[in-house]
Every structure is written in C-alpha cells, then in structure tokens.
Length: 233
Image (tube, rainbow, N blue to C red; front, top):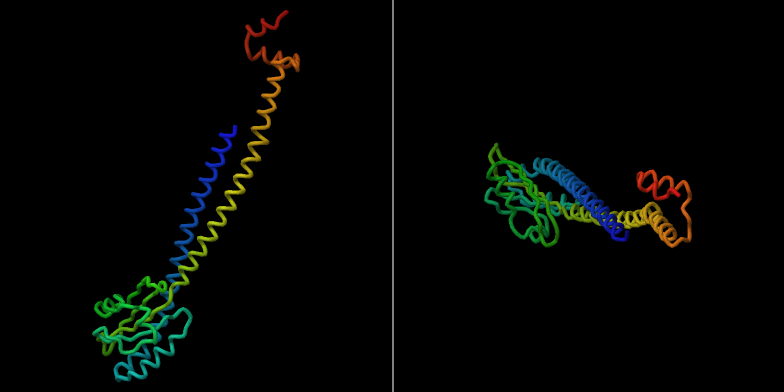
C-alpha cells in the first residue's frame, strides 16, 4: 500500500510539473515576443520622427546640430543611445557612451544602407541585451547614411526571469498540495478500509469474532453449491 501511495504521488507530481512547465514556457515565449514587438514599434516610431530632423542637417553638414539632436533624445526610457552613420558606415554623431555599449559596429547598419531598408536586431552584450534599429537616411532618394537607435532590452530578460521564478514557486506549492491531498485520499479511502478488512479477517480466523448468518449466506451464494453443502449440518 505504501508503494502504491508513493507511485501515485510521484506520477501526479511529474504530470502536474510537466504540464505547468510546458504551459509556462509558451506563456513566457508569448510574453517575450509581445515585449519585443512593442520595443521594435517604439524604435520605429522614434526613428521616423528623428529622421525628419537628421536628414536636413546631414545635407547641410551641421555636425554640431546632429550631435545636439542625438544627445537630446538619449534620455528616454530604455534608450541606450542614438547614432548617425554616413554611407561609409563611419559615425558622424553619436550619444556619449554608446560606442562602449555596442563594442562593435552593428551588422544591421551595413544591411540597412546596402539594402535601403530598415533593420531590427537584438544582440547580447556583457552588460545585457540590446535592441538595434537602423533606418536609412536619404538625400534626393539616395542613401547617404543610417540612423541607429539602440534600446536597452535587458528589462525583457528580467521580466522573463521573473515569470520563471513565479512558475517555479507555483509548481512547488502545487507539488506540496498534491502530495498532501493524495496521502489523505489514500489513507481515508483505500488504506483505512483495507486495514479494517484485514483486521476483521485475522480476528475471524482466530475465532475472536463469529461471522453472521447473513455473511455466511452471502459467502455460500458466491462460492456455489459445494460451499453451501459444507455449511449444511
């Protein structure tokens, strides 16, 4: 009986744990995709807004104005910095400290200028995850550079880790409750009646109790004619 209880509890725990982990995995992935899409949307809106201010200053060669613009927009929420590249992928204006965070030139910048298409890229650095959005800059429909917007995406990883921690705690609570409820059910519904029946049968064999005529008749009916004849005087 104890082995049955252990097997039942272990099976229930494994089943609940597996279902909870699979459900949480899909929940985390869905939340992560939604957060990334929202960040990409914000970066695109900011990039299109900045491009209208950056392109005229690039055409005039106003490097001081370009630097002022990128510094002014570098204080927004989760924004790691803004940079402006020319067609040769050389930075002509960038937020202070952005080069140290990027460490290397983002490949999305080269792709955006070469393909004349906006590019979005998530990268992992020692300081955390970054989202890089690059928008081509034009002069008379010719690509002359790229606008790079870098967001700190580490909050997405932090939120994902928070969901996993909550899932782990929830699974622990579920496992404890399942083990407790299963033990109570086995004890009250299975182990208890079986133990009482075994005790009654031992007492019956030792003669400490006598079976009632109704029990004898029921046993005879189930056993067939031979058993009935055995009880006949």
